[in-house]
Amino acid sequence: MELAIYNIKGEDTGRKAQLNDQVFAVDANEHAVYLDVKQYLANQRQGTHKSKERSEISGSTRKLHKQKGGGGARIGDINSPVLVGGGRVFGPRPRDYRFKLNKKLKALARRSALTYKAQDNQIIVVEDFNFEAPKTKEFVNFTKNLQLADKKVLLVLKDQNKNVYLSARNVPGAQIITASDVNTYSLLNNKAIILTEGSLEVINNL
Image (spheres, rainbow, N blue to C red):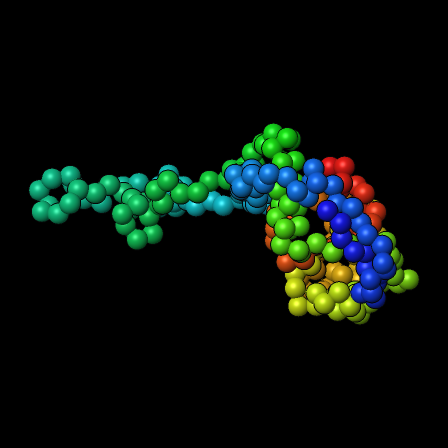
């Protein structure tokens, strides 16, 4: 598969970029994509949730009334979960939500996501570029030139670029990552994927 290469002004350079069919045209596996996205989101959870159970409530442990003969339901202490202010039954406890996936499965999920984006014509290749200084306006003009101003955009760079990162940091819907950090969730969570020539070389060999 070939795509036109654009410059920072959104102009066609007349050159073509070759997309590796083993990465951008695979037999997509939806379940692998599901598992990889599920793992990514699970890894974002802090797992610090906690509620107090019956034994942790501050209150008397005295039995409120005798077991029989009162005409009402039997009841224990004031910390009972059935009473207002009582403990919670089987409440959440701190836990780790992370789980492991096979590396080959994650690679398949990533390639499947790239294939989906290629099929939907949501991948754009641009020349390697840099900003002289961090300026949000420069990045906004860059997305406007590519007619992506109102879309969630993922810009993939070959290496870390401080000026480009700082220029895009305050732009709503813009995300900057390096080619080595490309993941299934980020690919699917953006409407357009902008690949620099340098990053495409890395991704073609993923």
